[in-house]
Amino acid sequence: MNIQRAGIEDVEAIYHIASGAFGSSPWPIKIFQHELSCIRNQYFVAEINHTIVGFIGMTTILDEAEITSLAVLPDYQKQGIAQALIARVLSVPDLKRILLEVSEHNGAAQGLYIKNSFTVYNRRRHYYKNGDDALLMERKIL
Image (cartoon, rainbow, N blue to C red):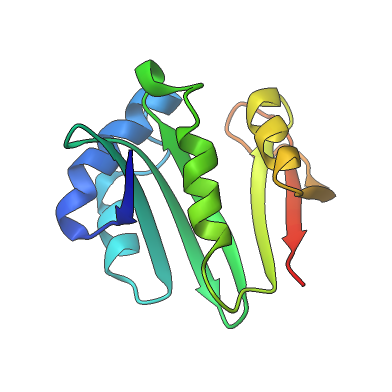
């Protein structure tokens, strides 16, 4: 597996992965195009046999980052790809805190984040379209 910085040329693969992982992409492709072209954002992709199978996106402001999206194609889930993508974000220099939101009903994602020392610090009620709450999680980096 190869983890590398994504570029605008990866937008279709990222959109395809988001659609495959979430049933339909939570964002239109134009949002991903904007995200990939914005200097505050970094996306990383996981590639296996020259095929992009997962991605993680984050927005950085000063020494804090927010993970905005993490997805792996269903056929490649539970193979350590999401863990490798999180490890890549955790290796970005000079970050003191990383934030994210996760559905209260997404136990698999919560487990992954807890395994990586993220803790819940708040909740957003009825955040998602289906009415689910979002758990706000953080990891402080010393």
